[in-house]
Amino acid sequence: MFIERIEVRNFRLLRDVQLGLDPSTTVIVGRNNSGKTSLADVIRKFLGDKSGFALHDFSSASYDGFCAALKAHKDGQPDEDVRALVPAIELHVSIHYDPATPDFGPLGDFIIDFDEAAQTALIVGRYVLKGGAIATLFDGHVEAEFSEEGVMEAGHRLAWFKELALRVPQLFGLEWRAEDPGDPTNIKAVDATAVRALIDCRFINAQRGLDGEGSRETDVLAGVLEGLFASASLLTAEGEQRDIAESLERAVADIQVTIDKDFKDQLTRLMPTIQSFGFPGLDGQELQTETSLDVQRLLSNNTKVRYKGYSHVDLPESYNGLGIRNLLMILFQIVGFYASSAPRRRRRSSS
Image (cartoon, rainbow, N blue to C red):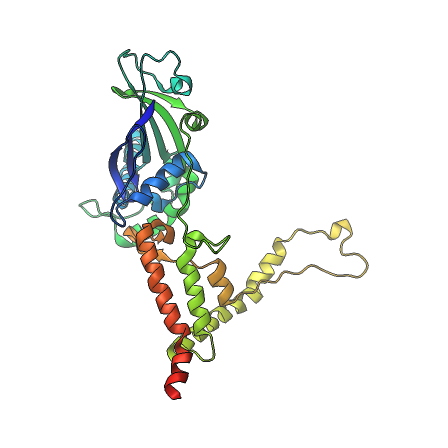
């Protein structure tokens, strides 16, 4: 028994691909950004961890499908027709087995055909819109305008995809089924635990900083930006770089003024009322909230590098291929080295 073929649909670069596997070992090679990382990630998300999916996990070709589904709902088409237009991320796993085997073990739950000569069991995982969620998915956007060709107006499209980014993780879910390879209408719902009992997946992540324990492996470029800001903040930094750093600090200072007023008042109201329990006691101390911002902390904890995507859906740093990310990392570090060495260059030139 072995996995003989994997199919992926609507996941990042993998719009609709099939991959045949060797019975013993399969090595996948290819150019940068050809989909190798996407293939590993889709298997991980379906079979490995619980990281879940997001809107930017859908292939860019799927975005028009979301718009088409909205238009169909707006036009009053039946829910089943609308649901058929809503994109779903799919993983199809074909498992080859010997029909003469007396005991199929965990595979037995997935063999649902009646062909005694059949040698393939098909398992399908789908990240799909949950039942009863159609109205909620489109709520607030049924007034979107479309051209005669069915193209959504640009402003409405931007608002629609911003809302989709919030709704997809809430309204979509993962489902598994066994499917008859010879009859797609013959299906059987199966539990995810049964799939993981059959297919054992282990992952070794690519490492970028073997000397940096606990580093945020997926936010490497944002970490380099943090270093660039530190260099630009030095008193000895070049004029333009120093101006940028001071502008960032002023922008954060302006936000801090708002936090010290409205945000602080509302956050204090959010704290539970505990005076009824006798606190704070005789000394009259009261609990207060304090939230402070600085550029360094924002860069360390809340700044991400994004790639410009399709339909205003920006892609996380980690979604690019490993080779491209490494090249960007090298370029960022060269720029950072150049900026940090500027004072030394000026001292040498003046001497």
